[in-house]
Length: 214
Length: 304
Image (tube, rainbow over all chains, first blue to last red; front, side, top):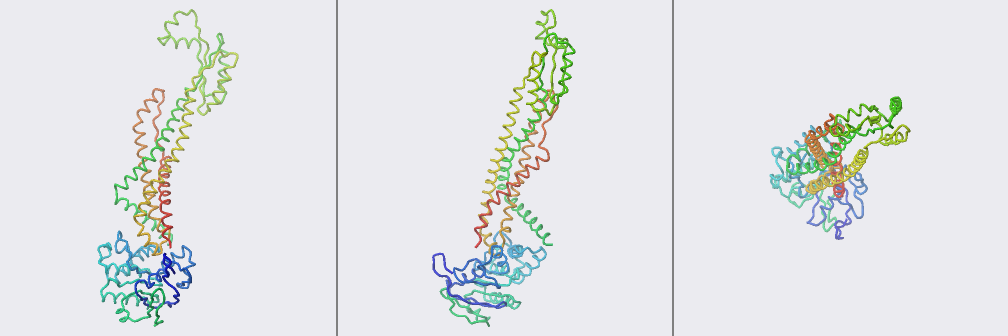
């Protein structure tokens, strides 16, 4: 995988994460964490090699299959990517609407997801009116609302206080306990030590270390 | 159940887009007004042409021609010719005017009074006024006139139909011009609506990118913009209908007055529900097409 300028973003990266596994992805800025996440979500395509997600070769997915693939993945984006002209509730409900769920199911799941990140009371607010931490939690609620098979989070606790960071990470681990594969990119070594799990370290686009499945 | 959800999603999206447009009333009304004015032009011209054709039909009687028999032609000759003509399918009626009757008509008109007093005998011939059948084509009727003019007992067959032929040609030309105008207006509307929607798509590009990342299909991303186009088109169609009705109402009295001058009692007719539905349909279709043109390409560029 190369950047537009031709520099290699990822090279000789070979790893597999089992279904229901919880893993950290660590490494300094520019190590290739976000690129790996983009490959998994079929946002980018590899120049060489193959990426299999849930048994499917992402590179060979058709346009429609990519849409379905992304609906099966919950992504917590680094900059949250919330829609400011919609309420917190509408932001979280988006993946459910995209999946075509009925209104009752949308309401039930959206409220549950908002509740799980402590934002049910702010459901009607615009993300603009929420703090950085609340926006991050909103992004997490949107990622988990559709009960994804794979949960990918890019620095999900960057703007959260330590208590909330721990709570969010425990939420991810709980989901892994229900069979959801979770890959969390983070710089927060304290959090990794507090909640140990498999740790894949990237450096300069290569795997530096991998503690292997826990 | 899936079908129900499908329709529900479309209804919700349709309603949401109406609400979104209502939140920006000035911009929306200006767009709808521009579409309405553009649509009203061919719609109004179409209504005008239809009424003009109706007017020509009322003036159909003016297509009649008069046959002047030769001096001394008998009643029997006149009656025989009249009966022959009445059997012709292009002929609606034949009015017989005897020399005496013609004289009395002329005596009733003051401008001829002096001239008639100087005559010793009635110089007027038998006259037959041939009125065409309503559905008789002009060409057939004019051919009949030419044939009659060659008959031995006929002195002259006269008609002032040239103006009517010109009117018919003018109406046919206007009909073709209308089609051309309609085509140009439709293209302009697709461009107007397309550009309006394109601006909206560009404003919402960030949101569309998020939707694409969340797995939204092309159809899902296009849907709100297509409904925006639908509302613009429907609104424009309704404005056009209103303008056409207003125009017909304003011209109604003048038209009735004109008809009265020709002895008719026809009133300016409205577009009719079929035509009105067509105007709305054209508005909705162009709105949808413009939106599709604007959004389809933009959505394609969002895909990885």
